[in-house]
Length: 611
Image (cartoon, rainbow, N blue to C red):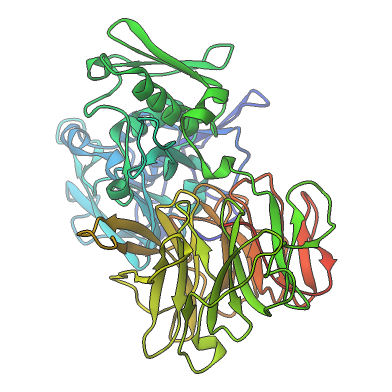
């Protein structure tokens, strides 16, 4: 979704009313007659409005002509009508029964234009058609999963006139809904639902790692109940192969439960059907944790989840206890920010303390023994991997005083610095990832625990050469900057591990997908949340910008950050409270909350947090 939104301009709004809740004033849209003829007409997207503005659909007026019916229907799709009941009034009874608005949402650059079709006339016929046209931006599928899209949109809407009452209604239409991107931004909100990495268990041997599964829900149509139903339904198809849900198969809200609301203590009681009636305590705690993590970003906030089934309470979980049930990347605070100084040594500053005093990292990477080009520090901050200044050799050592650097664990045969090793990245299991850019044998490699024989990671579907690697804190997703034909894009892959026959496991990246379809030159990135990244790049013909991106390819509402030029690296923590850092021609910079970038050190080439 683009960051620019269409503003202002006059428009006709036959199909809805806007309510300003803060003022208690309702402005009803005019119901004046619309033109009966004409070709290409657009249903403009509503200008971006305050989040408290509600838009209500208006039913069709008597004797409305076909164009007014179509545009009124399209307007009703962008309203806050929970079940699209008003939109169905624009359809024949049979079409209303067959129409499934929840099947998909198609997002267009602007609202769909209505191009008059060839069938019939309003004077001498009882049927008429329009083609809805526009340029695709994205789609949201039946699982509420967002995916960028492109190309032209064209779908036919057919109308017929009832022989008894003479009223025009839509009798054939595409499934799902369609709207412009500004209406989508007003109607929908991106939220994370949570599952557990499938390689973690609930038997106490290892704390489960919570994995965010981003989905879009209608923001003002009981999003809390939508989210609970979505969590119970299970993970989206892209994430499903690498996560598990603690809810037994078939678990759902009982029939008749239509809305869920927390009490005045922010406790939400969730009734479940009999599928969940006989679970154990640890399983129940995991189920409650999934819901609590998933609902924390909504308003009103939920501080406690209670689960009920079979007429009894199964368990209750508070926010404090949830942290002991499962780990989340956004709750793991790094101890230090790291950077490479002007002498190619590794230094660090205490993370999030406001203290900008830097010290060399203990051990060989901080004492100047080896000039460094890039470094990655393990998530426990006890080990580090550094690439030499020429990009040829990778070294792994500890971050304690007196440690030696030893022999390289990996060497590239690339002839130039740009054809050698990328910056490495550590995952949550303590394994080390790095790409070798040697044109004769480009590879993505994994070193278990940072040592041993490198394992080549399978990358089916990878189209281009890897420039950068960053594994997410959840350990099941990876971000890559991929170069193809001189253009650099950000792609997200799913990490799948298959046990080997007494040897190394097979590791592959599956279903690589673009996260920056509108950027053609991505130069740096870092994970900045459970499903969010901060990205440095530019559009075709544009200037370099720093912005947040969701891993599904959508742009958060407040995505753009203060401008910065010639950025060489960006450092973000999964914890959004930890400040951003970057390096550029001006050295090491940081971004205090609510202000612009500030220079801390005049010389620094790379900055990063552990991972």
